[in-house]
Length: 139
Image (cartoon, rainbow, N blue to C red; front, side, top):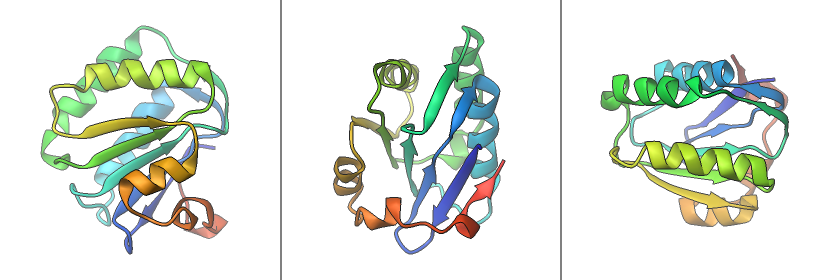
């Protein structure tokens, strides 16, 4: 499942891909959130990658991601982007995308646990973990 949750009370978007995650999933998920009228450009983003079973990316992901971020510059301000990645492959992938994003105003941080990400964003950890199934937007 590729889905996101917009939390209007704490002003953040939570992305939680599960199962197999491809470069197309990444781009579609980000584009859907950017296009969602509930989301503000100032919202923090939290990527919880812990439920990804298989990361399927090729070299095209770099240019696809960079193009999306460049084309969406007006939809991104100085928000925080927290990435929760406990496995080496997802941490490496996230680090690569963070390097590509250096010229953009967002601040990125990697975390191994949701508690660290929640603390850095300034939200209760329950805002990341206690979300009902009906509050997710599938892409």
